[in-house]
Amino acid sequence: MTRTVVVTGASAGIGLAGAKQLAAHGDRLILLGRDESRLAVAAEVVRAAGRHRPIAIRADFADLAQVRAAAVRIRDSCDRVDVLVNNAGGLFGGVTGHGHDRAMQVNHLAGFLLAHLLLDRMRRTSGPPSRLITTASLAEAWGVLDVDAPMRKRLLHRSRWLAYGSSKQANILFTLEAARRWTGSGVLPLAFFPGLVRSRFASTSPLFMLGKLVPVLFTSPARAADTLTWLATAPESALVPGGYYFLRQPFAATARSTSPSRAERLWNASLQAAGEWDLPPDR
Image (cartoon, rainbow, N blue to C red):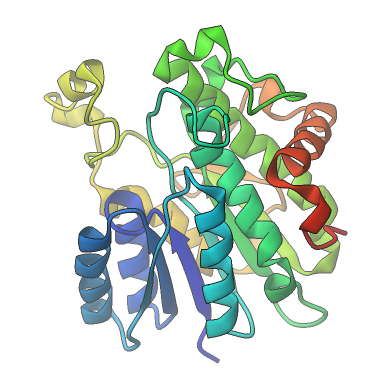
């Protein structure tokens, strides 16, 4: 049976590379991206790599209304989602129109919301579980995340790198708590660190751009996406629910990103920020 795979942040970098690999694997892709022209090009690239014409949906994750609209289009196009790759993200400052910390909303809350809106398409009562794969980062180590008020703009988040690190900490905590809540209903949550990647990411950061001049420090998007593709296709027995991986191997995160109590508190605060009154039950 052909699987349906949803990839956010799919118009470039790791998202596009992973989408191409999964298309070549035989999967049907639904691609989400912010830039319409880049997304159209990505759709043609993915089409050429596989057997199925992908569906392309434009959505800016800085706007939760667009996340909700994208979820409606995904739901209208398929009865099941076999893999959801929460990959959209970037290096941001400022706040969104909702008054939320922009980095936290784009990199964490939007994916958290999308997963809830597609949860009934992902739950399984028999057969292999669906997979929820989130792109995290080593940057979680320097995050300054307030798990009880994650969307509030903090003074320390004037540094885009601190804001980014906080959002990546949230990604791992989300994966941990999703595993606790959803594994029993046929969803396998996983996260991975892709490494330092030669892509559009952080193109406005002088430090990051300087580092890209040293090729040995960086890998290609295709190589970085290898772990993503492996997590989406490996036998269930090779994976641990809530696991965090790098180069196809378990990877250690900091104690702040692996605390069950912090994960639960972040989950509850994220539900409130996303509008828990109209989200489907998560148990």
